[in-house]
Length: 416
Image (tube, rainbow, N blue to C red; front, side, top):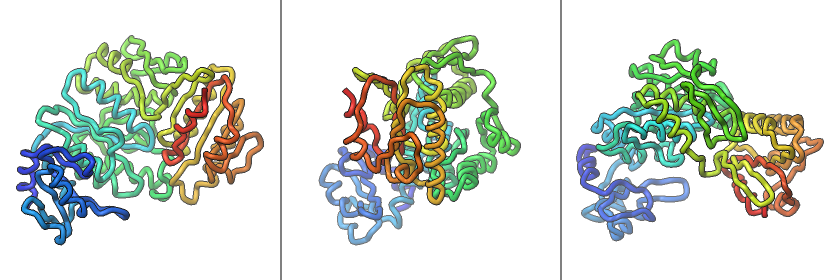
């Protein structure tokens, strides 16, 4: 069956799912495979649960009149998503970068939705599976799609851009994230800039932050829309207050590093003719969730929870910003940073050294990588359990940050 025929079935279905726990009547189940699972084995179950069709890529599971055998189910998902994107013909904004992707995506979405019917990546469905599923969530009522693209190896952004075919692109920054997969910061720059390569080749537009010299360097070959001059910080208390178009915008975001995210969202809103007053309303209504720079109040503590992810660049920014927090007593709880490869030891030591230089009242570092560092006034814990057994909270302001695998949101249970 060719992709156009599958697309016709898709249009008459209740959507695509790759998870039998999310089966709905008249949906299409697509059988994906991984190192530890084989979705083909669940095709028959999906049909019994109400799926209209099940797409499989192993002949032995093509056992029902409503199974569709393809060469590769993942490729079929990606082809179907691109086909759908072409059929809709709407404008799509894609963004990638080492830090701030999800926050920037959410800000862009909340601003553009003041005037347009938008559809944006849900959560962090930003890889070779999540991006196609995001595209397939676009509908004929969608006017602008906002697609987040993540990567930890070269050529991944190239693939995602080919699938998405964006009209506009933005790279938040080039930081020390996924160094193991990219092979160093040069690889990060090369990998993320694959989005620029697509935009240039296909005569599409890029949003360029003039505060980032790497972005400016790339802009010479691009059809660029520049921004960065119109937004400035008024104060942090601890939430960021910014000035734009003569307006003071009181956000629910912490950290001066969020200025770039806010500036990008404002610039894109301006480009799509969103009024300044509507931009202000949108930005002031946004509240971060999912462990991303959330302010959490406990009876004896104020906590900045930034435990969704961490890398040397974002960790440095978070520590530097926390040092400027006006709170009298400040305590940091940091977890290991992952996917750093051969650079892991020096990068963890550098973060420890920075933390110890900033005058925090207490420093707690958790995980095998931090445990190997040399500390003079930090508390090193080999595991979360070791930290849990020795930690006692008291009235203070806390920064909690670490890689997703550390799950440092568990720390909240240790406060009254």
